[in-house]
Length: 526
Image (cartoon, rainbow, N blue to C red; front, side, top):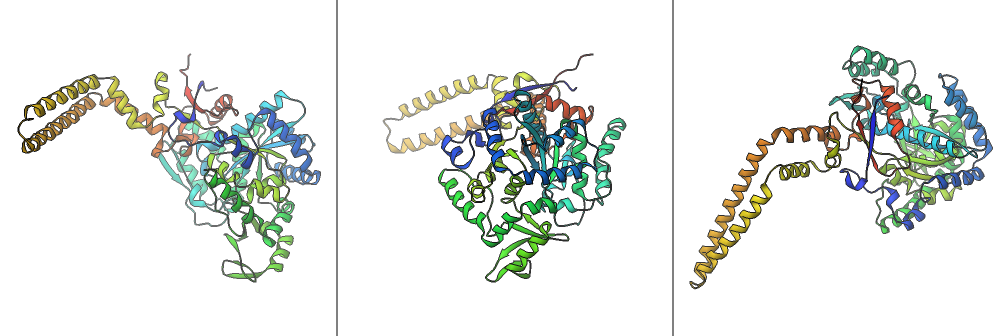
């Protein structure tokens, strides 16, 4: 296993992170969330969900998963979880993401490992319930521009395709060539392992992505869900029908939004009069209410006709960002959703909406955030590396020189000089004050120029140390954002297997920690 050491830093000490929901006031947590996530609250949620999750939904879910995994090689851990899901005492903890190119940003990896470790801890410590980690594929998302590129080795790679509509339904044409360009940067041994991992077979992109995640996380029991399925959507039909007939999401989210704003919280997602899309070949179109029914693109639809179509073809309808959580919680025996701060913000808009259709609102938890540091950093300076770069340079210059002492002494001398100059003309009148003031300004300008030149000379002397700080900062904050939002895990796979990296990160991720995880590669010994 890759020898990683883990350090924990408070979020407030790390540049680039806002306030997580875990730091909301007790009142706001009670109003908009389901309280704090803890081992006790998670087990309590299992009891609550058991009352509100139907055996019929469990049977349909298990049928879907068993059919999906009959086409994929499963692991012992997955087989165990699939078997457990048929039992009434089994529940899920879920995360999810868009189908980002080549595994996308690092936080996708952290999300998956977070829910895996959370389930493992709970399963070890109590016998009453079994928890299964689930990764929800946002396969119906149609924002291809957002996920078509990835970055590692400080190079950008993008999948060049003109396809439109839900990304999960894309054909994989052109994807193989993109992978080949990505993997050409690796040495032969690493390239072979990654070529096997990123094998492009026949079928749609969602199917490819399931296999990709399965190969990385299947040994840990992670199950992958794709909601773009007619049988699963049939389970959700009554709620989609309600949204078409009596748009309830708009009403309840608007009321919650007002409460969030009054409580000083950000409103994340825009709510629409109808929060469903209509799917056709290569398109995911908004359903817009009209006086006579609905409009989809330029086509007018009667209300009764569209509702009849929903009953016959539920796969043609797709929940948007505010309805998708309801869909997920309707079909899964889920007790907790784990996501990033943006996801948590739109979940916080939905508690009243869940209540309106009698679906249990889950616990929600902010995922682990982390950095993988460059090799050979100074561990004694860890906290410094995560502050603003200009502050780091300023601190370095202050520590490595007698600048503060020199400048302070100089300022004191200048103050005394200006005071003596003012005293010397005290009997001359106002005109003297004017030309004396001009001399004061000239002295201030000269001293300012002196200090800048002094700092420039000193900075040149410390140039190599400053450049090192800049290099480290570029690794931790590529394009000035935290590493996990931009960099792909492949960036670290030049000398180590991607599976070894997954194992090493899993060993270190603490799903109950609210702190930023800092992973430092320890020096390996022979």
